[in-house]
Every structure is written in C-alpha cells, then in structure tokens.
Amino acid sequence: MEDMEEISYDYNYTNNYDHDYNDTPTEKSVFTHQSTCWSEKLCVVLLAVSIAVFLLGFCGNALVIWISGFKMKKTVNTTWYLSLAISDFVFCAFLPFNIINMVMEEWIFGRFMCKFVSSVMFLNMFSSIFLLVVISVDRFVSVVFPVWAQNHRTVKKASIIVLICWVFSITLSLPSVIFREVGTHFGRNVCYNNYTWGRYSHKTVAVSRFLAGFVVPFIIIIICYSIIILKLRTHRMTKSSKPFKVMTALVATFFVCWLPYHVFVLLELNHQNYDQTILITGLKVGTFLAAANSFLNPVLYVFMGNDFKQKFKNSLLSKMENAMGDEGRTTSRYLSRSSSMDGRASTHI
Image (cartoon, rainbow, N blue to C red; front, side):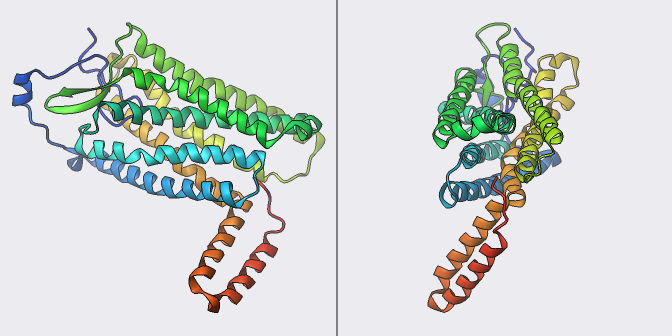
C-alpha cells in the first residue's frame, strides 16, 4: 500500500491519492469539511489568476475563432491557428469547474465530470503541442521544399492533419477517463487519481505524458527550426519574418508554461524524497502556469499578427456602423477605407 500522504494533482486543482479510499460512516460523522482557501495567500493569488485566465482566455480565443474562422480567407495557416484557438477555448470553458472546486476545496460535480474535465485539460495539452509540431514541420517543408509545398500544401490536407492530431490527443487523454475517481476524505468529496492497474501505472502515465507531450515534440520543433534558420541564412531570404516570429513566440510560450508542471509531476513520482510543502506548492503553481498558456496564445495573435489586428479593427468599425445607424455610416466607411489602406502591407500569419 502506498503512503497515504501521496498527492497527485495531475493537472487538476484537488488533492488526489493514488489508491481508492472512502471515509467510513464514523469518519463521515466526525469530520466536517470547511474551506480554508480564503485564509491562504497562495490560494487567493491562484484563484485570482484562474479567474483572469478564464475571462481573458475565453474571450480572447473566442475572438480569434471568430476572426480566423469567419473574417479571414481560409488558408493552411488559418486552419492551424483556428484549431489551436478552439483547443484553448474549450480548455477555458471548463476552467470554472476547477475554480469552484478550488474555492470549496471539494468536488461537487460528480464522477462523470471528474473524469471529463480532467480529460479536457489533457486534450488541450496534447492538441496544442501536436499542432505546434505540425506547424513547425509545415514551416520546414515550405522553406526546404518550396516547390513541393506549393503544389501539395492545401487546406483540405491541413484539415485532415488537424483531425489526426485531435484523434491522437483524445487517445492520450484516456488515462483520465480510466483513472480519475470521486471519493470522500475527511468529510469532503475529492476528484483523485486511482492508479489501480498495477504498481507502475502512475509512473507509466506520468512518463508517457512527459515524453509524448513535451520531450519528443520539443526535439522535432528544435530540429525543424534549426534547419529553417540555417536555410534562411544560407540563401539570405528576405521574405517577411512575421510568421516565423509568431510561431517562435507560440512555441516558446508553450514550453515555458508547461516545463514547471512536467518537472514537478516527475518529482512527485518519488514524493517521499522531497518536502511535501514545496512539492504541493510547485504542483499548484505549475498547473496554473500551464493554464495561463491558453490565454497567452490569443494575445500573441493580436499583438504580433497584422492580419488579425486589421480584421479586428475592420470588424469593430462595422459593428459601430450598425449601432450608430445612418448618421454614422459615412464616417465609419471613411475610417474603414483608411484602415484598409494602412494595412495593405500586412503579413499573413
């Protein structure tokens, strides 16, 4: 039997144990759970961060979906970024479950949502990194084999690749469906990891997630971008570097946000060798930093992608025109034309 004090956050905000447990009727009558979140500084800070991530991520990704899905011409690039935005949007849509759980320090949504919400979190992680890998490979092919890319790089093929990425992501998210359970502990319901398939089931899941969701993608992306940089420098290509900057920022942000989480999840495998307070704090901070990645992506789109900025400005002007009626149409049309002229040299993402 593993140590009862083992805690496995596993990309969720509750304390989780690696084996089944339920309070006895006597224990249920003795322990009455009371939330202590509001009295802990770290919990209050993380709660504020979570709410900010939810609001900014939900609205920001919805905006990116609206612009890239309905306002921009459908291209291979917009297909990649639209899928990324959908992944982050779904993640943010389910954040309120974890926010409520953190405040109450109790899971009140039942067994199905315990499994489903956790699965959505990992679905976001895997789909994001797989799409970043695909975009990196796409950039590599476009630079190294430009003629082949021009003849074979189509929106239909890009959509099929995106679908394959989602299928793999769903498959790798299944451990949450299998191992997440709801039980009672000291008078409260908790959503925890019940690794009961074998002695090494916990380690197998953690290591496989680290390799498939971090190490292997990182190696592929580094190789692709190293070759791209060498190719561009060798041939002194003078094309706009805007798409390259956007993609580099997205990749860097993803790995900076996710590295602490993976580090502490791996340290947790040998939790008896580390201070529990440091480990639990690291898991909490790492989890919230990972969640922050979902609202940073749309920020990068808006501030680094000229096409997104241009479409956003034009869309706002259109809405203002409809709201102000006939009196404002002349001015709005003039501003729209001015904005269009200013953005003629904009670069597609």
